[in-house]
Length: 157
Image (cartoon, rainbow, N blue to C red; front, side, top):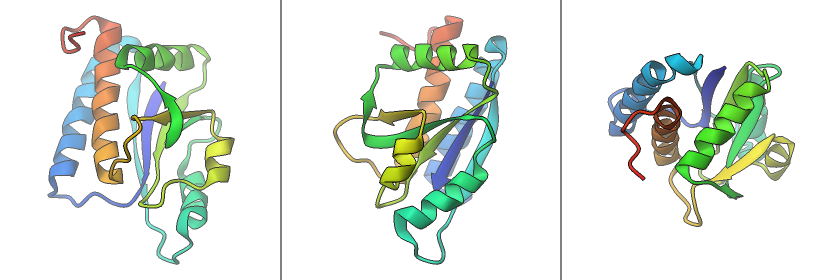
């Protein structure tokens, strides 16, 4: 299974957020090999026409792998523990779908119809987070999920 991050906005090449995402993605790539998973890449979009969440949704849809599972990051989504997310990923891998994309909206969130079309909606809790930090947090959670499933001591619960 290939795991993707799809997000509104671009992380600057020399930003702290870019460095953290790159670090966790690299760790995920190594930790997930025994699971047969790999990082499928990041897809960043900018809505230069000012279409808001609806315009961003159209750009995001174009970058999603065909036939892949879509997980929208949404404050109204399900809240999972890290072990529960790991099990959810294992279950998605077992379905045989080749890709899962975690989709992160911009400052105004994701369009409601886009979220409704998704296979799953995931929340990082009741607080609202900046989309740049959500990308860092999801990259870390993907790495954590892989270490949980492979028995690495990274996750201490």
